[in-house]
Length: 190
Picture 1 (cartoon, rainbow, N blue to C red):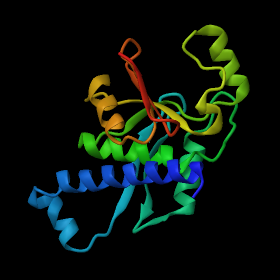
Picture 2: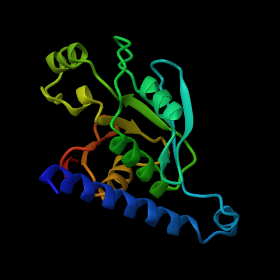
Picture 3: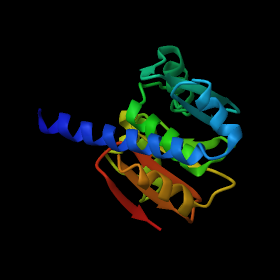
Picture 4: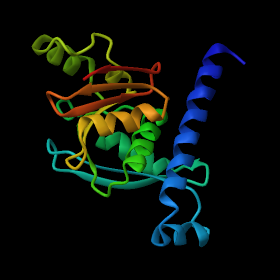
């Protein structure tokens, strides 16, 4: 096994653990447990909206160990660079981190997506306006998302994402959002 495969396996194991933990947390109430008892299967779902485009998405993208190609393509389109219209394949690990974090927070509201994929042009423009934008941002690789939940604090969302132990988590309390990515495990901000 190569070093890359090993770190990917660790990330996958951490994500699987996070999903397992959310299933256990969700199971105690009868209304939620009934779905498990009926053999509903293991699903992963992502709920988001964009105030920039006015679009909403509520997508089951993974069922019983398989990603649903059409659902993932819709997520890719939804998370596009809204400034340029550019679309890229969003790294499935980032999508999984977002979904696992949302499950841990036990909310029904969708994430507000502030930034998903960023073209190099968009990243350069944002970088010229702010010192907080990385030159080689993982957003340009489809490996990062900036998200907000109205009903949860930056601290709560970032703790859920960090609990996945599968990537980077940035807290931007002043701007009220959390950065999640599938890069090296690390945290920053306050």
